[in-house]
Image (tube, rainbow, N blue to C red; front, top):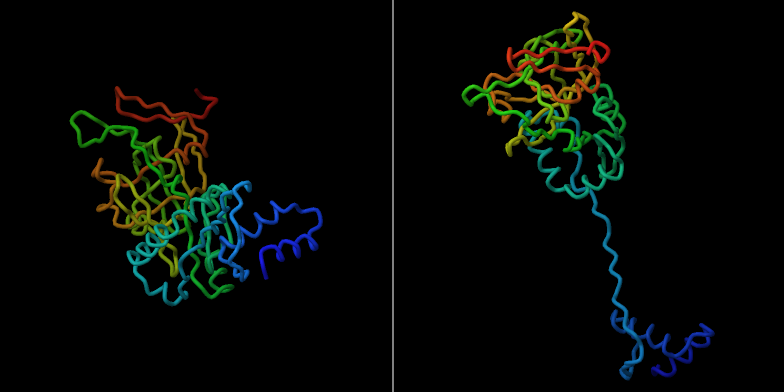
Amino acid sequence: MTHEAIIEKVKKNYAGADEATIHAVLQTLQDAKVDLRWSDLPSAPDVAKKPAIIFKPPPQFVGENPSPEAYRKRTFDERGALSEQLKEKNHQWLAEKFDTLKAAWLMVVNGEIIASGDTLKTYPQREQISEVLSRYGKQPFIFINDFLLAIEESWHSTVYKNDFYPTVSIVLQSDSGSLEIDADFDTGATSSFADYDLLKSHHVIEPYENEYVEISRHLSEAFGCVSRLINVEVKLFSGEVLRRTLPIHCVEKWNKSPFVRINPHRTALAGRDVFLELQTAILLDFANRRTKMFTAEQV
């Protein structure tokens, strides 16, 4: 079919279309290598050429959920390595999902988000993970928004002469154990962190099968942790005790982690989350190297 014949045919089917418009359509088809079986399509300098619109498909999640049995056989380090690989491969996908959902955590099965939360207080614990294992027959991937694990060191290190890191006394409790810790207080940390093995030795936490290990970074070093809801107790200067159940990131191999680079004696790092939840007023007494906590009414 000749170029002219095609134009006449299109005119009949699309009444009102002028020749220049039809020519532009045919030119577009030819540029797309559609076989219209003609060789005499003339150039049309009077027809404005528009740039092609390229539709880029949205990124897809990369990674297959292992079976519960396969994940159960992995060591803590192997689970952490898997988490790190998944975060690297899906960096853009995760960033977009966290931004769109304004989420603190995401749970992914078969490349789809099956659950999410806007606070780490709803981070999936043992019961929720067991329910997902039963329903899907696969180990869910759980990702924490990196913003909530970010730590900006806002005080100088105690490895320097005449420098002291402010501390707060907190008690970490569960039904099976309790531990009092003088935690370094860092307003530059969004969340709070503690020594996994120390908490385990005092039965504040207990390991369980198929617990998901998260990998994050501090001072450019990677560390592995599990997030647990733990009862946190602080004693005010007045003697009053405040308690809340809060997410604590329990860091494995704490003594080799970046958390002890600045303060080798550190066993926990208390971030903003604890005191935003408790709504305490804190006095840092540098002269006497003491921290005093009050309620807002007591200040």
